[in-house]
Length: 283
Image 1: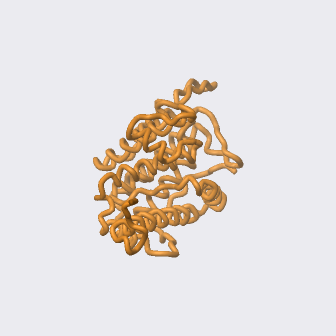
Image 2: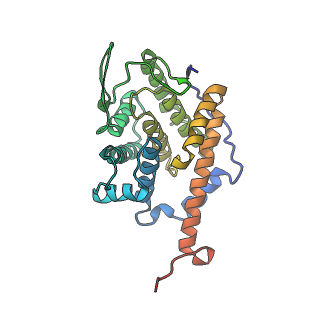
């Protein structure tokens, strides 16, 4: 199946069966979870761990944490996997810094994210249309597919990515409700990965673009859990086949809800031992 056009709808209702996401985010913020020492960094490490594991990294979350915090590569694991993790962490910090500065979304910005994502793991591709060094964030010069999905022809990539960046750059300044802001981040994620403009790192770059928009609005950052990889891929496929962006939005809303509920639960258990295990001295 060829990915034909960019699917982009805003605003629309985000279907969430449990708690309204706006209320859940407000609850998350009211608890001051982000003010807890080291919480933000642990959250960023978790983003890096799951995003790279989806793409094949074998590092555990603890190994990723030690690598990022102490620079120690895990024994018995491919160096490629460690490089993937450290590159992604650098790209995430760059993306969040850009969000704080309210940087415009442009083709060059998206390329910069991708270049950092594959800085140490990218390759050089020789095609009949020229040589592409993927570590520079250059667009692909060949056609690609994944399973039954054929992504847009390479000669359409620049136009489609430019259209996407332009639309995002306009909507990000106009979107006001939390629901629509989340929809915008999920849509950006889906559309960029469906254009598949690069040879390497499309998924990681697309998830970082989603996080950029969430950080722009000061929302908690979404994580696609590595243990839901199959459901994630299926949601992407179903959205393309049925030409229905709501499918992917619903998947991401479910992931987001589970993440926030889990973070709130963990915080409340630590803050109030009567609600959970809390903390006990082990002697």
